[in-house]
Image 1 (cartoon, helix red, strand yellow):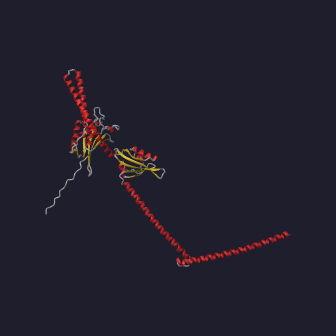
Image 2 (cartoon, helix red, strand yellow):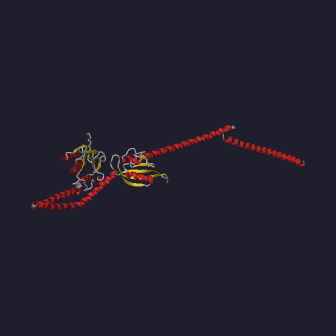
Image 3 (tube, one colour):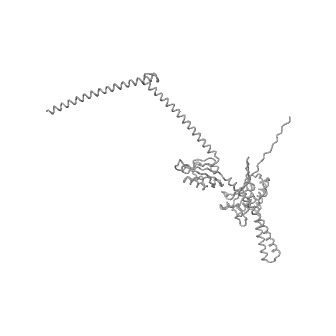
Length: 454
């Protein structure tokens, strides 16, 4: 009973404490709310005062917010316009840089090829197409486009795989037209920082004319040195051969024995052969004196064609094209063309269906320097690939009774006249010797103006 009463008193006491705490919480809450209202009211009054002095003169908060938003939007629009202006300027600058890069690449005197990592030619300029003799290089695989040039293909492949740089390499290139060209090549890899190779850049220069010029200069120097060295030796040989030939003739005239007469005849035959070889060698080694005369090539070519046609009537030989006038020695030029035409006729004399030879002329005139091209074409068996590089070497011959000096003398005559001679096999069969001679520069005649007398 006592416990029950005590428990009731404790419960009543707890309720009283809870009631007191609740009343205290309400009082504190009310006080906090009052203070916050006073704070916000003072803040609003202060903001209103500032707005009255600097902002729109309105007591409406919605108008204030709208005006603020409009100001922000206006600023954003101005910033957007500025960004558009800067973007337009940057775009124009990038386009101008790209156009300049394209113009520089297109007008470069050297050929440019850009090959990507997959081996596709991503870019090329007109000079590269001209140097390589190939049109439409872009977006083709370099190994297919340059298939006839294994040296260049090998260099590009090594650069793409290893990153090796090749500077001023000289390679041989054979374009689809078939003429062999000598190219200077510089190949370097394209890297992004220190990363992997993303492609290769190839710079190409045609060195064919320069190589031919160096070859002609070297040939002239070799001929001069050879002439000085061998002229005396050849004359001594001729003197000795004349002595041997004189004794052989004495034996033949004084002896009656058949065996001695046979020996003497053999000695005379061999001395004649050696004398002929020495004479031809002297023609090759002796310096030539080229006169400054005008030579009418058409008349000379007609005579050469007629002479070869009489010697080898089974071969059809004719001339065609245009022949101008060149400076030099008519006798030497006739000797060179006659040698080429006769060799061509002999090469195709046994051709099935009949052999033919064409002497074709092409005169190219220009303001700077014109040239005359003379091509001697035949339908014979052609020239073996291993023989082509040796054709103009002295004493190299494929004929049983040849001295090996005929083509060497031809080359010397043409070089001494400031020209060059080349040889190649024709795709349709047969060979073609191409002689190029410079045409004399035409000097304009002075025209005297006549003034009417007063």
